Image 1: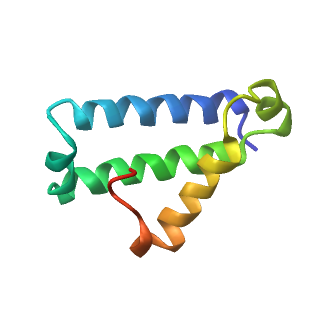
Image 2 (image 1 turned 180 degrees about the vertical axis):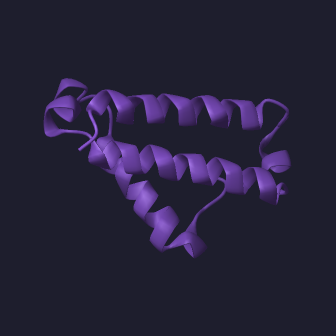
Length: 90
């Protein structure tokens, strides 16, 4: 099993990528018409959710203010119920 520090690094790397993907997006409407950017952001959110789900109980308890279940739950929606993703929430 991978150490938690690698999962946390995955989360940070994915959030950094999302920031880069959105640097030129001026508003929500620009994002909502950009299918390529949506796909890129969603893929990184899936990575974040997968990494969050694999963290140890100890790490999740240490950072208990983070909604780990919600993060992993979003990943499950994005992967298994992708047709119901609400892009205005993303």
